[in-house]
Image (tube, rainbow, N blue to C red; front, side):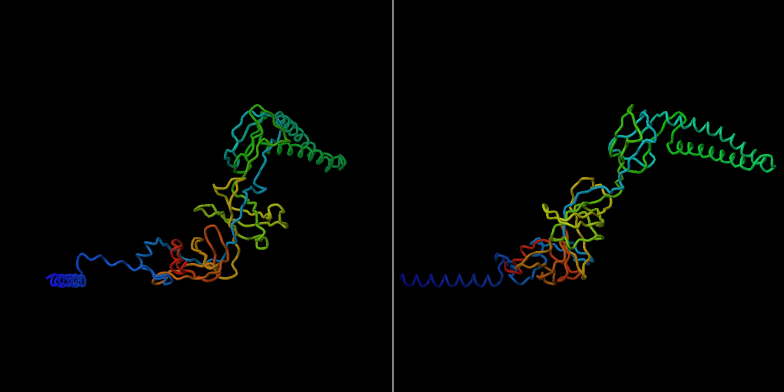
Length: 370
């Protein structure tokens, strides 16, 4: 009896298992959905959904005729011609002051009013000279007439003309001095800005004295700046006058310039070469500020530029991951120059090709098995 029961139970179990197998083969509604196959290492094939899930972004390689040699530190300075001293033509006392340190001024703007006795003296001398000029002119005309009539010798007419010329020179000189000083008849002189810029120094105050040997104001023209570059020893032979530079931390604003001089010797302490460059104006630039500067050299070959984030190291070589029809392929490249944001490639990539700029760790595993 027990034997028959065991045989019947086994047969029932076989029927149940067979039915479940047939139901599964018919795609029963409760069967779990098939999982998307994971990418195989070394294949490089990825679907659009896999690329999105891996967080891979791309950028287009662009053609470039320059190579970024590197990023070097620099200090912002002003060109030697950017500073202009404002001096007083006469000594006197400041009666009014119109500007303060750091204020922006335009060419011709009034800076201060100085009262001086010297313009009054020059004015009086000019008035006397004009009176003497009238007399000298009349004497010269009369002497010339008498000389022509033979009444007096010609030498006396020449003396009269010389006296006239002396009187004309004296009046002209006094008039020129008063005109250049801008002094009024009462002896007031208005000091004006000779250039547009910012007040860098104010050495006077209202009621204080000024003289012709000191500069009450110094104005800085901030239309352009200079850079004192620290060129590392490894780049010493590659940096030359005329090479282009750009502000590395200029944000969206392109601030570019050009190297004008390169030192002849390397500093023994810093192991760097000093170079100077002129660069355009920018709100980011302030004299004395430390900045980072990109050195740009002419590329000897047709090069392409890619974001610095696209470059990866595999097996001790520089590689990029190039977008293909079904995923990405690994490609070795030759770097011509490195910058803070972009890298110039001498070979290995063509302009217009897309390269991965994020998700590189996943692509390294997928394409290199790392």
